[in-house]
Amino acid sequence: MTAPALHTRICELFGCKYPIVQTGMGWVSGPRLTAATSAAGGFGILSAATLRFDELQAAIDDIKDRTDNPFGVNLRADQADVEARVDLLIERGVRVASFAQAPKKHVIAKLKEAGVVTMPTIGATRHAEKVAEWGVNAVIAQGGEGGGHTGSVPTSLLLPSVCDTIDLPVIAAGGFFDGRGLIAALAYGASGIAMGTRFLLTQESGVPQQIKDTYLKTPVTGTVVTRAVDGYPQRVIRTRMIDALEKASALSRFPRAAYNALKLMRLTDTGFADLVKEGVAMKQNKKLTWSQLAMAANAPMLTKASMVDGRPEVGILPTGQVVGVIDELPTVAQLIERIVGEAEATLARLSGAEHAVAHGGAA
Image (tube, rainbow, N blue to C red; front, side):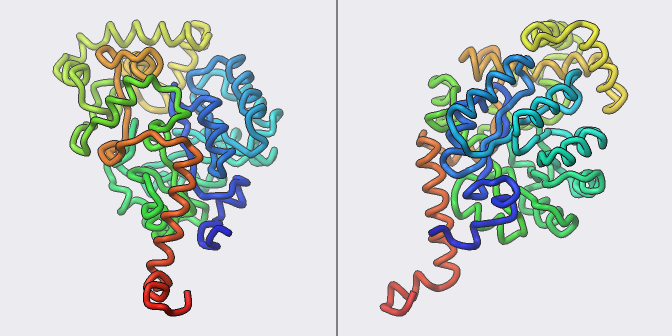
């Protein structure tokens, strides 16, 4: 029987056995990884930002064929057809809609009314306060150690601040990989942990083996936070490609970014009118220049080059700093079982039960 402390608010809210969430990583969190996580008692989240609408439909059906357990879908709040995607999630009975940035208030209200949990990722306490006022059900608080787009506040400072500020389930992200980290997050007030890099480095992850090997060889000091990819701070593995991007001028980076924007448009079946509409919305909401908008399409395509095509020399490798302490590729079930076992052992040690058993006392 699982320790009572490990049955948290998100276990009830998400319908999962353990408070362990696999994040929706672009080009990585496909149906196989998502279903494996949920089937093993965690909570898997499908990445839909780079999927066409028909591909999203097929992916949801694929997950449902693999497991009866609840799962989530990660959406882009600024995508042109986000309303249709929200309707699809409601129609298919998806448990959680997660967002890298909070959707508009009416979208949150629509999801909430339909019984779909809304969960944005935040990197600052003030953002947590804002989305809580808007009516979201939970948040992922990601500290600066996290991979991909990330903030500058360490998890150990961000997490307790967010937990003290809002009365919602908070899932901790940024630097987690084992059961000790899970207990540390619960001690700070979180209801669970969310992991990206640790799930990327599992058997069910579809990332090419040569790319996984690169991750496994990366030390804790082998990552860098750069704005050279798309204008936003993003933690990636430091490679020759990243060094070249950082040395290039904004003017020389723009043609490649514009080309990638057009490629992304074709891959995701986005019409030019929708692309312009989406771009105008992003420009207004995020106060970006047109050059920055083109750069914003860089990250998905450069990530695809590595994570799908297996070409790190022309792509990027998003990662959390935790990559430096990971040296093997377990199955998802093995990983979750191990994390739960470590968490229970940590609780026993902290309660003194381990000491009592070692000295012949009552456990």
